[in-house]
Structure formats: structure tokens, C-alpha cells
Image (cartoon, rainbow, N blue to C red; front, side, top):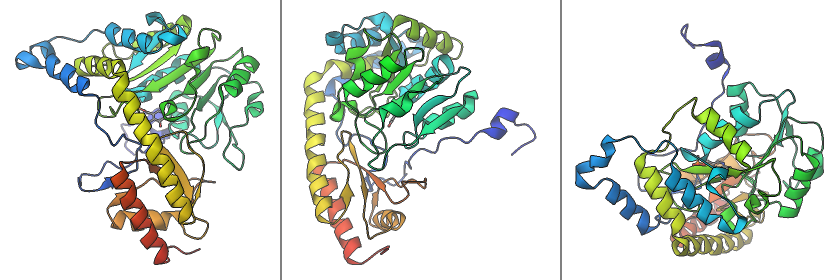
Length: 364
Ligand SMILES: *Cc1c(COP(=O)(O)O)cnc(C)c1O
């Protein structure tokens, strides 16, 4: 705390991202990165952009990133999405930050699940937004009817993080219809790993905003590209905030690399199929070790061992060079969130867990 800090800064409780260790020989299963490289077309597009001694880097990027917006529109052509219905940002975290400022700050508190992406309450703190954390049920399911109450907006992650549970489109549609006076934001960071996308509903619900990221299913967490799709008036609100904050949030490499990634369907499908297949294998292996493993529609699984303490399992894994995510939060402090790695990484994880359990680490 310093004399120089504003009262806002004094009050903030910032988000703490998963560890990005400097050691490179770790099996890193803690931040839901994709274990496979991005499309080779991404590397090619970025190489082109820095050709001729990086001449192009002298120039500011397109402040509207129109070519990237077009690539997003093409990606969602089946849903009839046009460029003015697309907003792009420096990772979906930045898109979400603008969503909170532009669309979720009203008189009434906003609603989100008590167990969800822990950045949502952080944005509320930054922008002074009241919220109600609506409990998920014992199986971590979001109960749509619980959102049928006065609110200043709703945000859910689908599939939810860190649980991996998905809501059906039909359930989301009920939520949209019951809340036509407020914006419903669906954060689809993990949708490509097995859930149904609400982008298909965008042209029927002017209160729906769907947020995507290229960090997970497109293997581009390091490039920082996210986007939102919704009614033109919702997008206009986001542009107003963005243009009051940073005119050039996406650099040249992100614009060309992100566009190239979105255009490579074949690579995309190969990678997501591989991860979904590994997820089901890992799930059976962990069930075999006595873990409870909820079904997941994401690139991670959320597990608990009824007889071994989660924090102690996580630290024993770390000693063996494997990092997973443990949240010191109510209701989930006995769970671990484990990112799906390559099959080799998953095998290393299973072997380490088998040993940890045989050694009776953290026996409850
Ligand atoms: C990873 C994640 C994000 C952030 O993604 P970036 O595009 O890398 O900023 C947003 N929402 C959820 C639920 C996530 O898990």
C-alpha cells in the first residue's frame, strides 16, 4: 500500500493467473493451454508480416482490425454473422473487461454462478459493479431458473470453468427469453471442445453476446486474440469503450495470425478431436484410480479424490514436475483442475497420481 495509490487501487483484489513457470521441463497442465502448436498458416502469416526487416512494424495496425473481424464473420457464416456484429480484443479477457464496463454496469446487481471464472468478480471490483453469485447445484450444474429474477445482466461461461460442465442451447435460450431486459453474456472459451455454441442464437436475441478466444482451441494463448459476437448495438457499445481506452489493442501480428488461425478448419478439427479423445482416455484412467471425474465438455477435467487431499496431491505432483490447478475457494478446495495435455503428458500424470495414491499422500 502506498500513499500514492488511488482509493480505487486500494480496494482492488486482482485476479491471480495460473503459474507460468520459468522452468521449461515441467508438464504444464495448469492453465488450459493447448498442448499442440497452432496452424502452420499462423506462423507463415506472422513471418510475412515481419518480412523485409520488419518494415511493416513501423506502421500502426488497423485500429478496427477489419480483416480479423471478417475472418470471424466467415468462421460463423452458418449463423449469418456480419462484420458489424464482431468485436475483437487483446485476448478475451480484454473483451470481457469492456463488456463489464459497456453492458453490465447498471442499477441492479449482475448475476453469475458462484463457481465460475474467477475473473468476473475482479472486473466487478474494478468497475464498481454489484453482483450476486448464484449457487450451482451439488453436481455443479447451472440452474437456469435461478436466474429468473431482477438483474442488471448475466454472465456465464459455457462450458463452465473450472467445472467443465456445459449447458444446452435450449437452456441458454430459456435464460435469454426470461431476461429480455438485460444482456446475457455467454463466455465460450471452451465451446470448441464439446458444447453447442450460442452464436447460432445471436440473430434472434438482441440481448445475447457471445465471447470467444483463440487461446485454447486455436493454440494461441501467447498471441492474445479474443472476440465477441452479438447485435450491432451491443458491438457499438464495446467499440465506444475500446475507443475511449486503446485505439490499437491488437497488434499487426495478432491480426494476421488470428485471421490465419480462423481460416484453417482442418488443423482446428484435428486438434480439437485429439484433445477430446485424450480427455476421455484420461477420464477413464482417473476413474480407475478412484477419482471422481465430472463429465467435461472442455479441454480440462475437474476431479476430486474422496480419500486424498487436493492441495497435497497438487504439491506432490509438482515435486514430480507436473503442475495442475488447485483453487483455495469454498466448495471446490478439494478439487483439482487438470488441463488435457498430449497423450504422453497424460500418461505421465496418471503414473504420478498412481504413485501418490499408493504412497497415501494426503490421506483423508
Ligand atoms: C481462458 C479463459 C478466458 C481468457 O482467455 P484469453 O482470451 O486468453 O484472455 C476467458 N474466459 C474463460 C472462462 C477462460 O477460461
